[in-house]
Length: 126
Image (cartoon, rainbow, N blue to C red; front, side, top):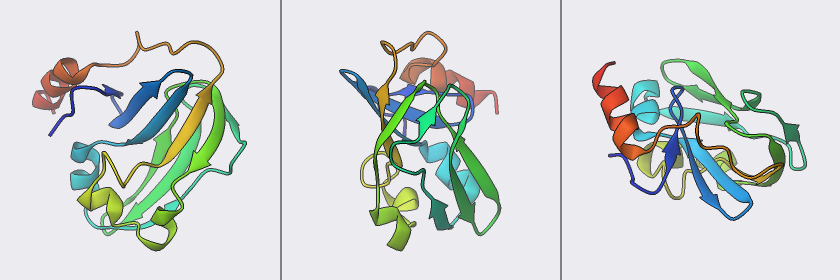
């Protein structure tokens, strides 16, 4: 399951860009690999990040994993539902299981990210 309207990283984060805001989360491949997600440490609102900075931490039945920002920006919103319902990342990672929203510091640079077709091809190599 790879939605067509998103961009993806090699670390299995996804980004939906709307104007100067990017909504971020983890891909279906990532949530499946992690197993049952039991805890999410969300970023602090107003946190400034650069590309590849740690945004959040996910703990699951199998491992702990970091989520990295694909962009420079400031966290404007976090998905508070994940604090009490981290399993939303398993059941609906592309909608209710989003992690945070970033106000982008510069126009979105998606040239380092994969589109859905490229990400699907990348998954086939794993």
